[in-house]
Length: 265
Image 1 (cartoon, rainbow, N blue to C red):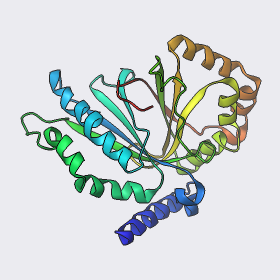
Image 2: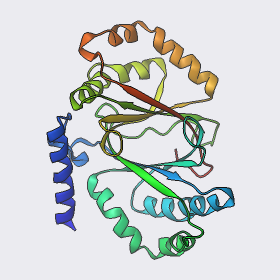
Image 3: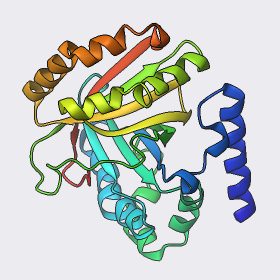
């Protein structure tokens, strides 16, 4: 097991180095305290069959992940920007070793196996989901750990904004990450009140190179107000016109999400 973990970590570090991504030589979150995020996007069946996946996540998977020290786990339905049948699941890991070992621990967890039986035993005619795709992300050094919104403990209304920034090259992607970190864009977010939940550099997933981040808002009106403040801020005007950070993003995806009743974020 330890050898497999070492090989997986070495493989990711090598891939990052070859791509010219920042921090390639220090991918270990144990060394830097930076989390890893697995972002899963499930395509759910239509009709009442959605209950199988939601019951699995709320009653089996999330409790089992929490027992491993994995969490808080976020589960989100789509408001706009993506297919309404998609269910987004954000799983934070303290390090790559925990990510590597999680599936094996689920397989040997009797409590999980019992609670997950309807999901694990789903037939081809009544599947729990159609397919899912996933990303493996490494937290930015400026925000090394996920931030749980203040609204979450009380289950207060909140809306999440998930953004994916694609770049035309590895160098451009690295420069955009530098803009967020050393350039001060994340600091600007914090000063203005544009509340990040996480920022992640994509190590594995579709449409690379890209980065993924999430912000939280009380509602859409609050979201429009804070982004307007951001766009008009002198700090952003200066940063956005800095030639060092020109042409770093070639495509942007914006998806609005609402937390499931059992989401921990």
